[in-house]
Image (tube, rainbow, N blue to C red):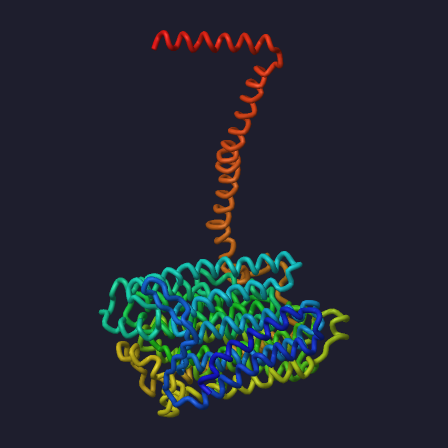
Length: 632
């Protein structure tokens, strides 16, 4: 089965080529089947490899010699180990469900085939990212998913605002990618290789706090900040909601934005050797988690709430990495992929029923009309809020437990973030499904539950969101943490250098009980405020309090970036265009032309056509030459 690993990315690539070339000439039914089947076959092979590979076994497959120049040898090879297998199952499993969902959601779109071609291409690059056995192949996938993100965010390219959102995502990711690329160069100059295994074996001989290792770790983290939407490079992700909702589920919830988490987990030993880098990750993740959660409290667009929730949850994962809980970060990555994909697709089902409406102020009372959508979103809300026995309860508890002994400040901030998460999610649930309907009469007439090709993926993801947490039961419940045992070979070197002290059973019980009480309290408060009466957030921003304005306007970060970065650069560009380019460079070039033209006009007056003038000029020339010879 392991010999078939090359087929895993090949099937999505073939799906891209077939749908991309056939485009509008192929019936939509075949487009959907080809696009979805290509991911399903990849999932089957990934599942077969997972089931047939002994626990902890690591295999490398060299497909062909790629780069061999002046001692630099980079084979195009794939790495199959526990971490890559988990990512393969998430990408292909969740990706397949989203492809099936997209058949119903995008059925009436004129760009149906183009959409599936882009989606298949994205999965291909994402699979390259996690399968590569070295940083070069990871970088190919890294840049590829950035390109596909640009194409999918700006899918409806006739809308200028959507094009701007796509450009914003592309440019901000390039900022992070520069850091990644510099880190890659520094890895090669330091270790003479960019192969994961060789780098980690050599890095184990470095001392903790080594300056070069710290520089590498921080440069790679800059790349992760861009791709995984962390402060200050996170503002592209909420704007990326301009793309179709299934795109938000796949790219901005389950796969692409977790690439930064995967990269740091894959490079865990480098970070363990750099306490400065670990502290930086913790601080950035903590600030991102709390700020994004505060912003989500007052958003009225259902997709924007989920977008800021994604940013916040990614911050959670980075905090786990920063405190050394690498398994906890991967665990939350996995559970988040399930319940956040579920929530995005559930939001898409609501938007589909509401004829494209995304403002929760115009929803309400949808529980009876959309029973399956309501039930699945309820499960997703319970999971992300951290209520037992749903998946988020176990993965969040593991991160909170890891931060408890690390720092009281970090633990407190993450606990507050957890409570805020529960509040804005229950607020979204009650505003959307409870109270009375606040939309138009035309919308009310068209309300309907989504078709089966949209509801079945919701049900499957709801099941995963319910039971996935049992793969990582805490010690107070079981001595066998299945995921931790499975990932142990990946983190064996980093765990040996950084032991994370687990809190006592009494403390862990206290964390669980305290978290449960807090979540139930905010859920009850949200229920009383948003479900029992028609709640309407004021349309006039002036009616909001100071704190609501700050939250509603996203801490004015976009405005600050525009004032401090974008606007000065634009003014500098205008100055360079007018002064340096037009007056300087163009002036020099055009001035040379004008000078030549003016000179030629003067000289051409000598060409009169009169023979007498030419004889006179010849005589003067002869006299000049004679005088010159006389004096010399």
